[in-house]
Image 1: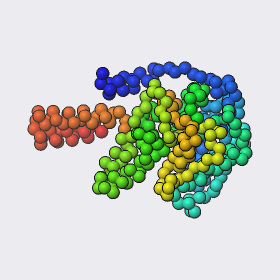
Image 2: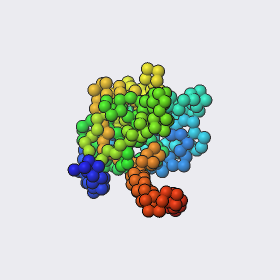
Image 3: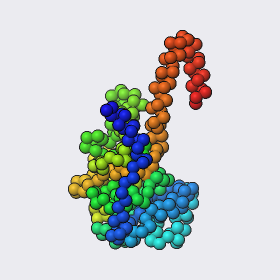
Image 4: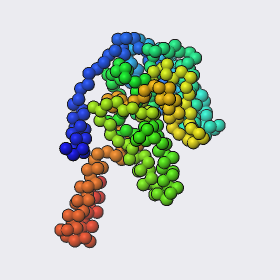
Length: 325
């Protein structure tokens, strides 16, 4: 059977697949530490925190560590108010970093290291504690409590990364020994240095790697990933820190930490049914409708050329496209 037909059939059936829910995470008293970064999120942060809060009801202990920096709006004020309303809600503000640390990824690494330090110094993390790392900009709207509990309760890995219903988007954070062993933007630069057009180089190095991972697939072992949400065994993180570079080269801040975990022998997986989003700002251009519309438009154009001649068909085609858009 044609592989594309199989993939299409899986895509159609995915929404009907009901996977068993494992509630061991709640039953056996595991605790959760929710961490994330906040900058200029006044428009959504309270609603996002309240939504995340619902995902972890039933766990024996829930702590929060939100690190804020460089906000020009009321983000810090809203977080401070939430710290008085939500139990164990900790806020760390680093003030204005961008004047002294202009590089964005370096700033992010510094902010993330503050929540790791906070966890080590002030929270009691043991083998039953999991650290859940969130992007707090409303990326995780599809995340479900049952999916989180299934991942933790499965016991198959030490780190679980989110998947997307559309193409997996976070290629900057992804490392896989065969599929994506190198930094995608370093590959892009090398291609352009050899004379490859920037658009084509980006397609080759980045967008071609944005594949769909069906929810019914087996967990995908990786050396690094993120995708907007990750669940880490807290004891695995002890002594580790984020960094924005490897051997002097810029990388995603998640990569050095995840590679260190893999080197210690911990298992890291993308959990296919741990879906946190459909499409993101990085993958909207890869919607299936684009793949359908492009060949249909090409066929329409060729039929017009054959029926009424090239010059007349070109004008008709352009009018049809204008109407279709």
